[in-house]
Length: 214
Image (tube, rainbow, N blue to C red; front, side):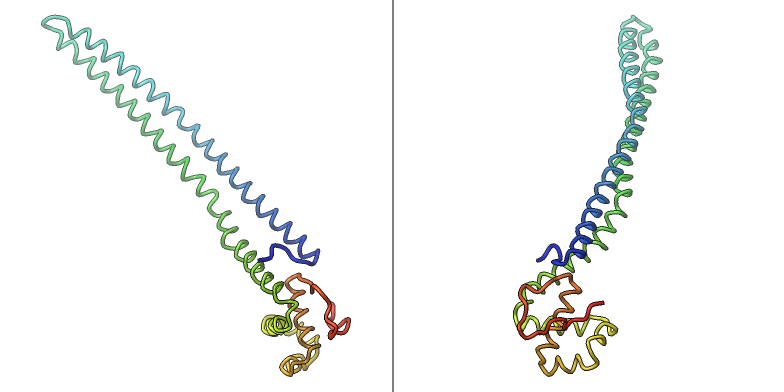
């Protein structure tokens, strides 16, 4: 597998695209963390509510316990304290519920914020990048082998636009079928150039300037 092209313009473009992809992911991770921090601050009122309710309930329960020691009327005097303590516990429970809700939001909202940007990377940029790496890796492995160059020529005939192929001559396909070394080399060079690759060593059979530039 090949990471970058041999030709400088293509390699620079790939490198810049990779850097932008990494920065894009980093930026949205930072945005997701920022959203999480903002949402988590919403839990502070719930924490205070829980703390206050728990403290008040404890104090009322303690007071009711002391009042309950009064002979004869102790049970009657305890009821208001017990009811108030239960109300305070309800307030504390509401504070806990609010914190749980905020915790869920702090998990869901960052995931939603990062889902679409990450989908663009995973389903658009990454498949194209991996596809080029596989194709370029195979082409680089066979580019100096005669049979490999024939395969590259076949690939060029199958994938290159007709407008590009016709510039090589009206009989380029027929010349390739006939095994013309010049036609094979020209088509192979066309495929390599489309991938941003170079030949490792010049072929003595291919005349200079066989591949038109444009």
